[in-house]
Length: 430
Image (cartoon, rainbow, N blue to C red; front, side, top):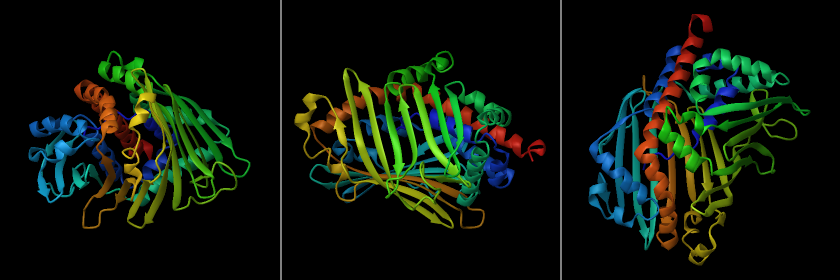
């Protein structure tokens, strides 16, 4: 249940780098009020917040039961509803930046105002030792539409293409247009390299690289610094997106404390890394490699392949990644004797899936709503208990100290971006 500490610092820095010429993209988000609602909603939900007593008590129980949920399934006090073989827990959130609350609320309605949030968690007993999780997050983000976000992103890509051969200009624009955001993120991450190179087949190749600096946080965010150095630094991996013709579209990697992103832009759109520019197809694939050190062990996976489908409807923009093929596991030798069907189970049948969706508000003054949903079926077993035990220390360290500091850091960074965009949308930014 708790949001674990994925390294969102690097992705935020990438966003800032592509926003080096961000006056036009800011305008593309609509009226100043529209962009402000979006960023206020994000700062509120992902910044500091309070939780009611019931939610505080449930969170560690859900975290420990993610891979072995049978006991949780039969505990009626953990749920807000029960029907047949399905249990449901509903959470709700509302408020403003630094004044936000999350509560257990079985009757929570869909988000109706900017920053309203709802999470619906369902656990279904799928037979024998199999249990299926379906978790859906909903966040109202104001009047911004998917088309407006797409237009803003297209302008960022155009700015990167026009700056090809002159990355110094991107750095100057970044410092000038987003000074608060640069300072806020710079407390933990540096953007060391911006390389914008004309591609011989058209458009521009974009290479961004940087470093995560846990040591910069030791004074102001000591528990977050400890978490980053002990759990994030040892974790590395790569995410490669490619199409049916095996053309790569972008590649992101992390090695120790360094991260990188390679992509290509042409005519305001992403383009394949090699060959002539082309429109991104509605069907793609993703390959994920990831590994970390836990105690004396190295644990990870290689060649986790997912099928990605894009939705480009007038009022609905989404992508869904579905994983139906078991990856190659990197596990200690003594664990191999436990490798039978349990680790295959999530990839059988419909597979595991992850969806991100932005749906424009339809009724009068109804906000657009961002959705995230994942579906995962697990089979209880010795190896699932072992894998769950590996994450217990990381989850506990995050929950008992680092999480509060991470929320504060995220809230301050998003509020800084909000202030920068407000200034760009003001009289001197138009």
